[in-house]
Length: 363
Image (cartoon, rainbow, N blue to C red; front, side):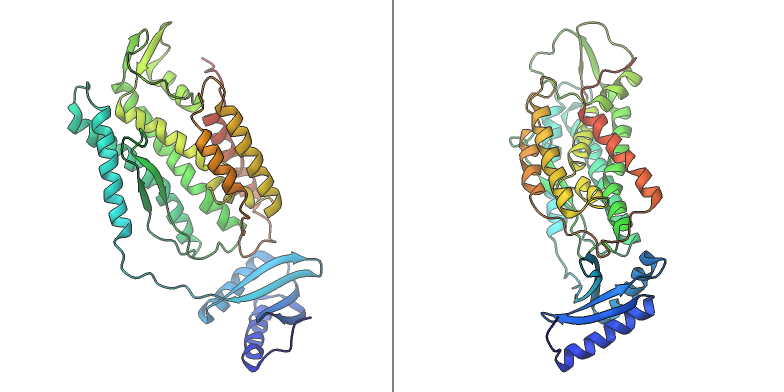
């Protein structure tokens, strides 16, 4: 049992209870715990829609409800939540410009020896990388806005050439308000990797015809970790290659490979990675944490295999640390993921496996 509410808390409980009943729930009991109104409720037939109505009713009062299953039954808590409008900030723009500069510098170094020269080659690499990164982040942004979730502009992360051969550590957007339910969390989680993967495949189709096929090893070249999806596109574009040949990737084709790596790493079901959001839609917080730890360890082991040469060790360690953090889940953590989205779970799983498993090209 909660403590006796103060006059202000009593008014808050009355407001919250009216909204809960209006949304379609039946209140079985009410209490207040540490200033937070708590209601044990009986749900209507369409529980998910009722909770969405409750969100709409409480939002003008700067209140957010949460729905959880507890030993005593279904519990709605009503929490004060102020969504502060961000003031003018040049940080996203500054990071974008810094990332564009670091990618351009990387493209310049990659473009020596190509017909277009380093300047045009750097521009082509910059355009390709930004197309993949921006498409990925816009996928998240659009899905979030469609579900009424407040998010920031993308924050791009620069990485000058001596640090990585990619020119960037990727990009992210900050989620300022929680996802209302598992459907929204799933859509936000999958939209980025799906859009980024499509963009990566398109860039790969553009870049591979500009690449060079040579017989024997290429002096000074670095062998990239194997990606089955990339090898499949290469076979479709370039056809079967003679025994002992090597493919020297054009910077645009290299950008497509980077995009597939970024997609695969984001789909690790750990913590707040995109794959973590997706996994949390069908698993409890504890089960998702265990899956994330197992996936990070598996990636670490797979990374040691000859086709990868330890390329993903650092990301596997980072994913392991992220997996130890408990995912908060959506506001409505009780209503199930929709049937269509459950079927769509096969899509991110397939993309992840196509980018990590050392499968041979079947033709």
